[in-house]
Image 1 (cartoon, rainbow, N blue to C red):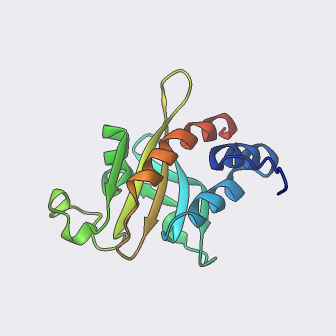
Image 2: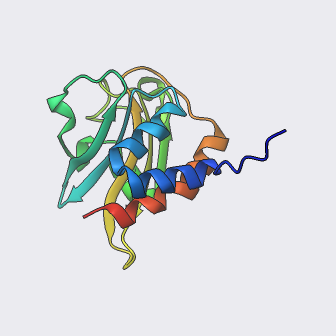
Image 3: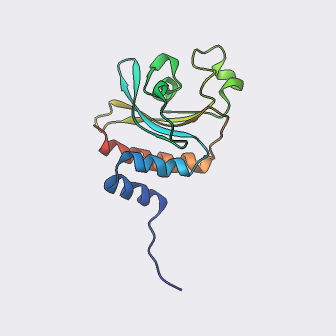
Length: 152
């Protein structure tokens, strides 16, 4: 048997960030899930700007570029550090909210700079109901902080 030293998934993400940049690393994380979109949104006042995005279907979506914080699921990730919903239209926490009806599933985690200032969010999201396993959330908690070093 060959003794091959393969990097752990977390090391693979870190290596790809360093060698290929943010979007290829987002694509790698997206491939681990069934979500269509994986992105990093930058918080600018009360607006979220898509700083980096990966779309599994490779379609151009202008509605993904800028979202008011108050109309996005990101507000919950910013407020609580992390937020997940697998089926927003059936999630009782989201009844009568302005952002329901388009994005149906969301996992988001707050990104903070070393000084503690919020940068924005790392998110997986989809127009269809999707779930994310607890093991994947645990993995994302480990690797998402590494993206901060590559953000402007």
